[in-house]
Image (tube, rainbow, N blue to C red):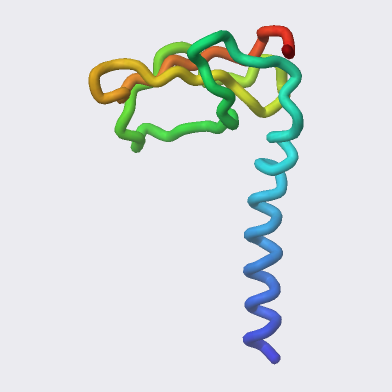
Length: 87
C-alpha cells in the first residue's frame, strides 16, 4: 500500500513538472523566416555543447522560437522569436 502511494506521488510530481512545458507549447502565433525551424522555447543552463546566438526569449509568449543551425559542425544556433506572419 505504501509503495503504491509513493509511486502515485512521484507520478504526480513528474506530471506537475511537465504540465507547464506542454501548455507553453501550444499553437505558434508566428512562423519562421526561410532557413529557420520552429523549436520549443526553453531555458538552457550552461551545460550544453553548442553556442547560442541571439535571444532564447520567447518574446511573443507562444512557447516557440526559431532556430537555425550554422557553422562547420552546426554547433552554433541562431535564435530569433517567431514573429513572421503565419503562411
